[in-house]
Length: 183
Image 1 (cartoon, helix red, strand yellow):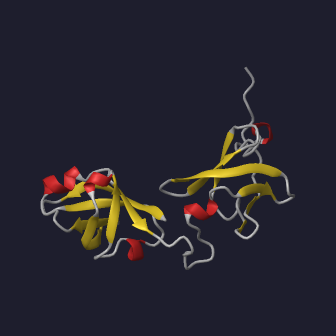
Image 2 (cartoon, one colour; image 1 turned 120 degrees about the vertical axis):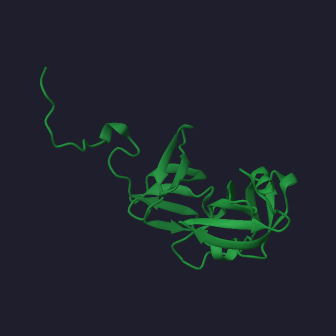
């Protein structure tokens, strides 16, 4: 199975290094020197990681055969894809690969059906579960333990405890304690 583990950003310096938008919880495993990665577009790869380092909080990689800024810039926005055994699971039992979550049924704690996970959206500060409801509409569920306390892979179910307003806007609570001014 192929998993996207990163996206190449801008060139860094003049010796072929690039910034990486990491899309894996295991960069030390997937983005280590010597790793050979497929690419999207396929014409850019495969790429072999020659060196890697962290600079100012960003991962920088250099690939074999990419020795200058022009070569690095040509790779910008290329997706890095690792081959992963479908039976492999993350070391941390609280972590999941995207393919494990896709197609899980989503229910509330009381068993009310919400829908089915169709996609995982990775944002800088948290991930979102894209859930398709039975009526075809979508709802975005923040993938945090307070809202998604249980993932049961055996039963193929994600249990959620949605805050008021997440599933039904009419239930939303006002965050402000300030009274509305009368005209």
